[in-house]
Amino acid sequence: MKSLIIYSSEYKNNSGKISQIFAKKLSGDLINLRDESDIDIDHYDLIGFGSGVYKESLSPKLYRMVEKLNLKGKNVFVFSTSGIGMKFYNNRLIKLLESKGAIMKGSFACKGSFISKEFSDNKIFALMDRLSQGHPNDKDFQKAEQFIDQIMVSLNR
Ligand SMILES: Cc1cc2nc3c(=O)[nH]c(=O)nc-3n(C[C@H](O)[C@H](O)[C@H](O)COP(=O)(O)O)c2cc1C
Image 1 (cartoon, protein in one colour):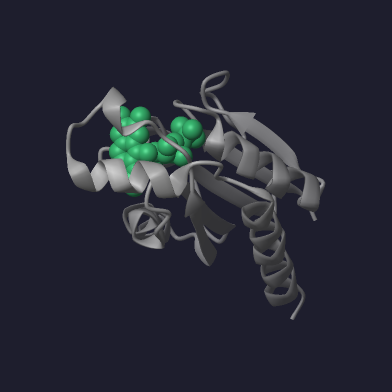
Image 2 (cartoon, helix red, strand yellow):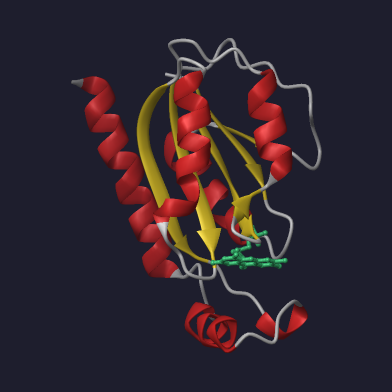
């Protein structure tokens, strides 16, 4: 089975670190959207799409790239890192992928460190900032590996 991880990690490479865990675990290929925009997915059986969260959204670059792909019948999963570390940020991308005929295999999210002062004076962001420090950490990497294990089980059923 051939796997591909496509990601955008524009801030601190937090999502890049998670992408590397996924690619290693799947012995798959890894594409950073910063380096490539023309992507051929024909030969892949499983494709993971992920990015950091910037102002409540995954990277617009990722959405633009997904729009161009033919995903009919492709197994896919989605992931993100964010200050808050919640999966709901993935929902818009999940809907887009499903609307293009992809088969959704899972959604993963974890915290990714950020410095709130760099973009906001909001006290909520200051709290999120403190809680996010050190992430993604070894526990997050472990959860990322377990997430892939679950996908593999569901694909082999
Ligand atoms: C400009 C900017 C906006 C952000 N907005 C949010 C946000 O709306 N919600 C959130 O939970 N985290 C937010 N964050 C934190 C990032 O999602 C977090 O640091 C993430 O791990 C960055 O991923 P990356 O290093 O792969 O780019 C923001 C960070 C930046 C730099």
